[in-house]
Figure 1 (cartoon, rainbow, N blue to C red):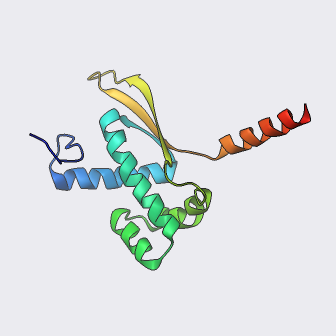
Figure 2: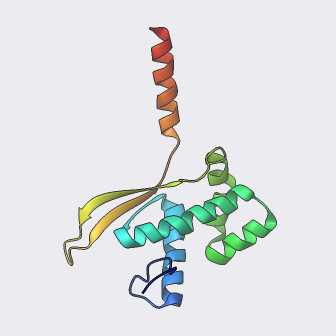
Figure 3: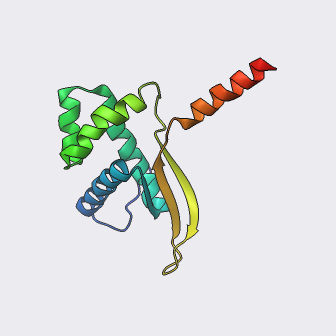
Length: 134
């Protein structure tokens, strides 16, 4: 029975799984969009959102915790400078998973994981302006 056992094993030992998720998080934060399998995407979401939340906290301790997960100092700097200000008024939900089909070789379900941009709010404001004008 798997009672109270959170997370997916992804067919790997724990050290490989942890390293893989850390590397995928680094890639996601660097490129802001990656393609992976559904199961990996769902696990990646929790790790990436925790890193962005640490970036929003902004303390030295949070920066050191982030550096323990993300080995690239440039990406850590991006998290604390750029992404923390982008998501400052957002209470979570920094990533989006979009299912895109199946991989040709093994028919594994694929997804795109991307960081949410704040473009939607601009469109909502434009709609409000147009409805007020009527």
